[in-house]
Length: 182
Image (cartoon, rainbow, N blue to C red):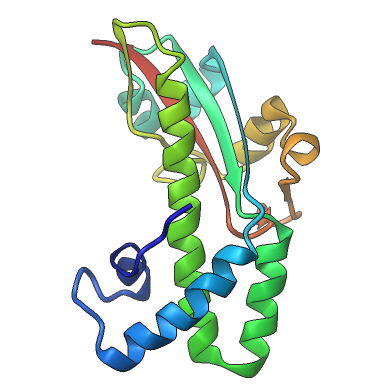
C-alpha cells in the first residue's frame, strides 16, 4: 500500500497545502513505521439490501435509489496498527496525531482497494454508488452490528464492536456500496 503526504494532509486538517520542511520530515519519519504496523484485512459480500435499512434511513434510501442489491464491505488496518499508535502516543502527542492521520489515509486506501476489487465482479451494465457507512446522517450507528454480523467480520477480519459501538481495531471501516445499472 502506498500512502503519500498529500493523502495525509487532509486528516491533519491542513487541506491540500504542502507541509513545511519540519512537518514533512516528521511525517516521513513516521510513515514507514506506521505502514509497517499495518496488517490490513478486507471482506465483502453482495446481497439484497435489507429493507429495514431503507426504512430507517432516508439518506441511505436516497443514496441507494434504483439499487436492488449492494455490497457490504469491511476493511481494517489491524490490531498491530492500534498497538503502534498507542506506543507512539505515550511519547509524543504530536506524533500520535500524525500517526492517526496516516492511519486514516491508509484505511481509505484499503476501502478504495475493496471497491476496485468489487468492480471486477460487476456485470458490464453495472456500476457502484458511493459507499455509505452506519453512523452517517440518519443511518443508525447501531446497524453496524447487523452489517458486521452479515459479513462475519469478527471471525473473517478481526473487527468487532464495543458496547458503545466503537470498532475494534479502531482504524476499521464498514460500508454499504450500492449496485446500480449504468
